[in-house]
Image 1: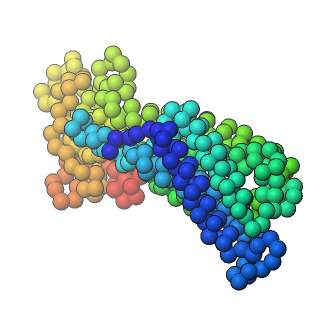
Image 2 (image 1 turned 180 degrees about the horizontal axis):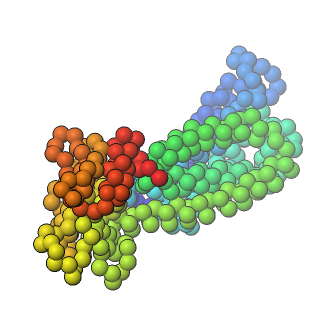
Image 3 (image 1 turned 120 degrees about the vertical axis):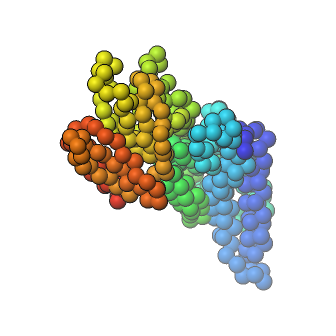
Amino acid sequence: MKFRHPSFGMIVFFGLFIAGFSLIAFASTNAGVAPKHGLDEFEGDRYLAPPVIFGILLSMHSVAIGALAIASGDDHPDRTEATPHTPRQPGSFTRFVRAPLPRVLLVGPIWAVCSLVALFIGHTSAADSGAPGTVWGDLTGNPLSALSIVFLCWATANMCFAWSSLAEAFSRDRRSVYLTVLTCGLCLGPLTAGLFGYFGLATLPAIIAFPLGLVFLIVSTALLIPLRWWAIRRVDRFDLGERLPAGNRRGIGRTPQPPEDALQPGERTLTSYLGETFNRSSEASTADPQMLVLTDRRIFRASIIAPGRTFILEQAEPGQLSGGTSEPRNNHVITTVLLNGRQPMSVSGGTAEASRRFAEAITVLARTGRLPR
């Protein structure tokens, strides 16, 4: 699915959706609230409707961020045809933070203005007009009250973008971290914003809400811009490593050495063992030296025809690794990679100490999933 940057129309649509949904909740709650001069048959709480609309407005900013992510889609084209040896990375729901910075920063004020309009509409028909001096009570008469709402809604959107940027930074190589950050944001973001709006904002004095909203806006913007920049650079570096050939990643103009020249794009060597040291001037042996290589994608035995020319003889999947052995035989050391479900891979030569260390390392890797330090 091709990524689409959030358009201006899409941003406005979600802003209107936030305002409309909040007004519906406010109207249904306000209908059951006691009127200003007495109780009706509902016998409701006259102070319930304003906290409801404030809580829903702030929490909906977090929810709408998620909806905007889904509507924007993922920017991963199908890379199977272009680079068949490169594994396709999983899609990311936070790629919308990679939209141009002005467009990202535009989301907050547009949604804040839509929210303010919804509050103005709700205030005109509210059964409880609020206490003088508070954000709700001075909504239509004090510009500080209106500005504090704009700042707080704007800051909420910025914080959601900042949190999404943090998740996006790990969307390629740390999938568990990415999912954890994303889940925490989707759960804690709406909950925290909604609780603040419900329990504190409506009755908060406007003279306090204004500087509080201004500080929140400055802090959220200061977090969003560098976090977004860092996330984009981190993902781009990883994607660049996936696209470039191994030789280009390790130095332009230099002939890749074994096992670099045998690696696929984006493949990374975990450990390797060279059976014989390649010596162009040596004529003692006519056999090409061989090596065992373990990467993050496969296990293979290769023959080194010449520097920069490595030919893979056989290969296996990483999940087939069972362990390794090192044993002397006829004045040579035989190093073997043991595999499940197939014949082992062996090479001859090298030093006994290097062979032993390699065998121990891949045995630990097979048992624990990690190489020893």
